[in-house]
Image (cartoon, rainbow, N blue to C red; front, top):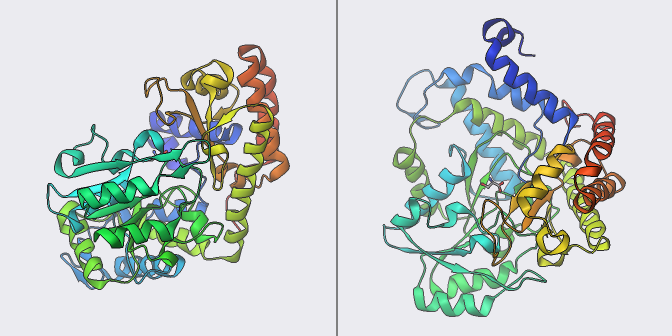
Length: 418
Ligand code: DSN
């Protein structure tokens, strides 16, 4: 791999080669990251990057589309099958674009969206004040009622929604480890006349692999997602519409020409490959193992006396309060664990008293280590190694780094998934 790059551009080659080694020798615990198959990487690096394809299959603005149409149609059909959707738009360049296109499709500037507070697990694109989109639409918040269980305050959600009349009631989170009461959520959306939308970016692979519930089974209208997290595909976005052709048409128009220009056809082909992989029965075993491994890590952390936000996990991620548990900040924990070969991210916790760049928590998860073939035993060991570093600090880093390297060698990054 990279033969031509090595010859033609030694500087960029060094960066890519370094990343290959970093990924092979360390353990990836960032819950939004994963390893894709070489088949996905081949599609990403394919000739389709040469092509402009504004429009949709059968309705393009440029000629020469016989093969781009094929690739995009395969991606659309597989996405629909995977999530039980009637319509799919596979063109959003990212999850952020998917969410922005969704807002554009369903609202006029100034209209209201109700989503989860960022510090309780929401996402920047759900209207954080630092984003441009927060100046276009009016974002209001809901939160957890009980941080020790993760229970959402549905009574408050209903009361506020009745008063503020959001056009979109938004579920879906980037740092929330529990499942929602989907039926209750949809009933609140219906009561106030909002469209029920879920950003499934983090748990898309778990939904596809039937390891967690599918919000469409409870009446959600639309789901946005990235394709590169638990779904194990290329970096990109999708928007799925359960039933309404009217909504799907608005979404298509919002993505193109509303927000984006030419679609990234190489990425769309890679999405098709990833959806094909996720449709295989073996993906269900993978998704279930991701959840089981996360539960094993949460149990090990709780045995170690660590405070976990939401009291544990029902999905692929864990949010731990390292400030109250170890007296070190999330930033310090991230740096120490990185030095020991375990990559994760610092994260704000609910109502954090510390700053976002040096918060109280860390967020970690199991999608990537499970792709390497690790099970409960290894996940528990990884958690123990993390605890060793968090408790003993610098003095443990070298020792733990050696064991992490051995573990990484024993579980190499796969080239394909059976
Ligand atoms: N950066 C992603 C995550 O890590 O959850 C969300 O955009």
